[in-house]
Every structure is written in C-alpha cells, then in structure tokens.
Image 1 (cartoon, rainbow, N blue to C red):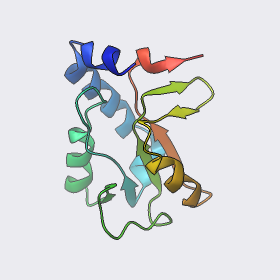
Image 2 (cartoon, rainbow, N blue to C red):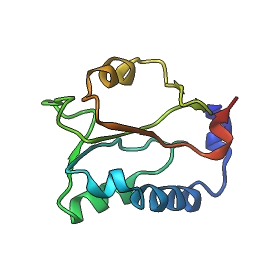
Image 3 (cartoon, one colour):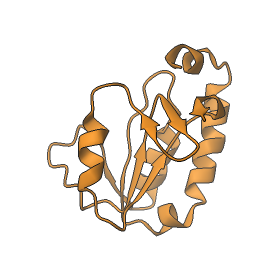
Image 4 (tube, rainbow, N blue to C red):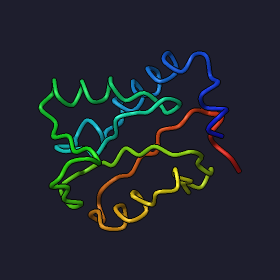
Length: 121
C-alpha cells in the first residue's frame, strides 16, 4: 500500500480535491481546534488544511506538539496506510494514533484522509 501511494502521479491534484472536500464538512468548519498532521511523501498532502486553519484562526494541534491535550480538539484528521469501508484504520506501525484517539472527547469527530486506492474491504 505504501508503494502504491507513492506511485500515484497526481497526488498533489488529488490531495487538493480531498482537502477541498474536507473543508466543506460542517464538523471542520465549526471546529475551534483541529488535530492534523504534516504529510510525508505518499500521504494526502495537508498543507492546504494547515494554511486554512491558520488563516481562519482555527486552533491547530500537530502530533509533535509538546503539550498535546486530547480533549482540546474537535476534529482529528488522521493519516493511514489503508482504511476499511467501515472506518477501521491501518497506521504506519508506531501506534501513536492508536494510543491517542481513545483519549479524545466522545463528541470529537475523526476523519481519515486517504486516496481511493487505500480503501479496502
């Protein structure tokens, strides 16, 4: 799956469409604070999301932030190697999101960003 992601020639264009859709979601537009990630090669590129948060005074928490408080963010935008159609996520193997996400508020929304090819049955 990692090789497949990296082989997508139009990743930048497809990422822009995904982020545009993400920014149209009510949960994202209403959020006062988002957990997001800085993309690495092969992932959906999140620079547009980060820029939108900063230009709209939406709080932005990144995984590397020292004072990460799980109940602070309204929406968690997470990467994944693959996702199922039922919302299960295969991460990179470090377990960081697996440890963090259960600590978020019950009303917080989690959104996995992926290319269509990363969705498996």
